[in-house]
Length: 486
Image (cartoon, rainbow, N blue to C red; front, top):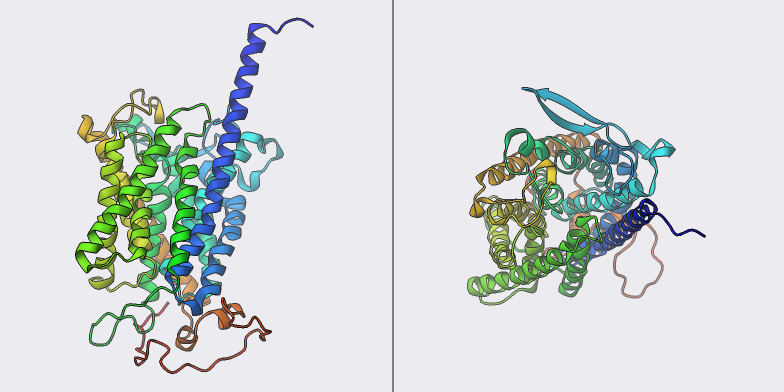
């Protein structure tokens, strides 16, 4: 057999590289998928035992809902306009583009719905679908915690479909699918356009903005705010679940961030992973110091949210900043998450049981801003059609910070009104909030037909009624929840 020619060797090398990239990205996607278990544990632990099955049920079913919605509609809207990622032909490249002043602005993709036609369903496209689907599902999960303990399950199902088919995919297209935010650099010289390496804005800020909108519209849990304006804290039922879930999330985050290199050949993934670890640690420690100074005792739930805040914040800049900057980003996020959660609870009187709007919304925005400040220009050459590395304000490029600010504004102005409209319409059709009686007794039996915990494991008739327990809210009189028409 003749020795392979140089072109044949080059092709074999390229094929091997593409295969390694696909394997790396798929494995990273599997890690991100496992983060659903972490979210389920954190949210369930931070809420009350009487709602455990309901909260777990939302976190479980949202995975299936997200996949179905993304498969039929969302993937095409998000990624239908992109070119090849894993060395294949540009089989998706069909973006709806408008012309403004001679500049193209992509708005959404127009092919790939249902992974159709068959010629489109290649290994590269399948890998892109799986990886991006796991990111989208993370966004779908975030609002479930903010509306926990009073959200009708049917309303949750419908709203999750709206996220996976419309809300998430369109904004994700603007940043990752070749849309207009990614073109701000090439079109107007604003750095590389809006850059978000792994999802501080696309995933977390989108989810956090929706969380704040839903928590506001659905109203606080019964008994949370008294008629005299006093706040009655509602304690979580399982700190061990919260801590275990947080570690699962921190582990999965390596797939989230390092996997976003989309290449096992890109050694920058080591820097990404290290920055991710550093920010998670400084976020947790900063939360510890702040909470200890403020209240005298380090509540573990705040430490967990501090770690998650550090992870959320570093998600956008993880590939573009030095280790010292990652440490600073995490330190700021650990303080910011506590301050923001307290402000939302005590000043805005918005009841977010798990702090989703502070963890994901506020720190998602901080992560995007930090990229515009701390990006050092070492990495990102060629990203979004700009030759130099991604460079922030502190290294001489104010344009990158402006692009990040535009992306934040676009996120809020797009996500908040659309989420509010969808939630309002769903409320008019099926109702968004459970009855006061069901809320006080717990949602497990009336909504799910089974308790999350059973003392003896014996049989229980589905839908069995229970009377309102005396002192169900810690012995205090049941306060009527803030009126909600949704």
